[in-house]
Amino acid sequence: MNQPRQIEKRKAIINAASEMFLEAGYAGVSVDGIIAQIGGSKRTLYKYFGDKDGLFAAIVEQMCSEIVTPLTHLDLKRLSLREALSTIAHTFLEVLLSPRTIALHRLIIAEALRAPASARTFFNAAPATSYRCLTEYFIWADGAGLVTPGDAHARAILFLDSLTGQLQLRSLLGHENPAPVEQERLIDEAIAVFTKGIAPTE
Amino acid sequence: MNQPRQIEKRKAIINAASEMFLEAGYAGVSVDGIIAQIGGSKRTLYKYFGDKDGLFAAIVEQMCSEIVTPLTHLDLKRLSLREALSTIAHTFLEVLLSPRTIALHRLIIAEALRAPASARTFFNAAPATSYRCLTEYFIWADGAGLVTPGDAHARAILFLDSLTGQLQLRSLLGHENPAPVEQERLIDEAIAVFTKGIAPTE
DNA sequence: CCTAAACTGTACGATCTATTACCGTACCTT
DNA sequence: AAGGTACGGTAATAGATCGTACAGTTTAGG
Image (cartoon, rainbow over the protein chains, first blue to last red):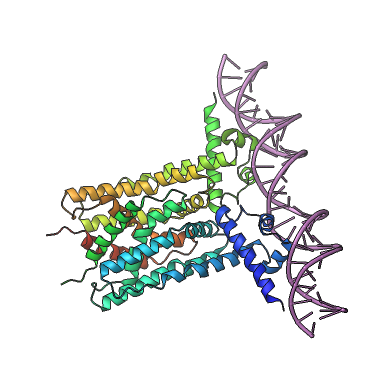
């Protein structure tokens, strides 16, 4: 078998098509356009992916598998609660507001009704993993006595969403990102409210 | 002039097209389809709206002007902080998770890059108004000594987003809404964290 | 009742799209 | 080196879409 050749071609198609879909949306990209970009024949594209929807699904799966990794390698247990929340806030905001993540987000939302399987893949890969990661930290912090007992999962959702909600929406709508100083003010206020709000009762 | 006739027709087009766009997205609706739905001639549609993009812009403007009203009629100043936050939480969640709002949200996000003017209209009408409304309350609560001084606007963003973020995303992705009891748990935890987090220092 | 404007219905042209077909060429295995 | 397989390039099929044109009909007002 000549797998390497096939794999290379497959990757080339996925890479090029990913960028195009992220930029122009599902309906804004034509199969002819993809082929014009990377050369080759439409026949092989259809051989690998069946049809345009199959290509879309493959691309979503590929991008979702790439997006998770940087979030699971945080070493938070040596930090104070304040420092840990600050680290989490900065790390997540950087990933979630990156142009690529925003574009993927927008693409998935746009096609959610037409491609529900991809929407589910995305949700399980990206936000659910983030919540889980932070939930684990809150559970640990609870055990370590850093916070007052409470619903760790709910707290993870609240903290993450409070930071990302508005900034993410603005990016999804194509607005300019706000000045970093404004982001910092939001992060500071969030950490202030949360550290006080879940502080252990003495 | 026979304005009533023109106005009626215009409204009929906007109403029918709104539903169709919300359901199927911009690319999923054809002008022929709209006309097939309501009868009449494409000619008049093009006379009123210029082209498909013009129709889209008119629809967004119309829906945005409708969506704001229910949020500005809350009388919060007689309530305790906890009760006020609970009222806000329930009111906003109901509006923001309604199928119509979600569909509009999804539509705007999907077309944000192609129709930035509509995206801006939407942002100013819906989320910005919500934030402003809640910001005013926090400013008042600060003046009334119910909370410790702080950035009212940031707090408004944090509180609202912490509640809506995950639930809204799940709806945008077409998932079933979670059980009401789960929503309540999230609201309860949010109110617990916030009331404690912004309580006045004694 | 009559005129002028607005509306309807259908048909049309041009363009774009997904998908399949054909055939010659490059490549890998044996 | 031979033969089968995957690839490239072009073209054809079939259908949908936007926007316009034209001829007939309804409506509003004097």
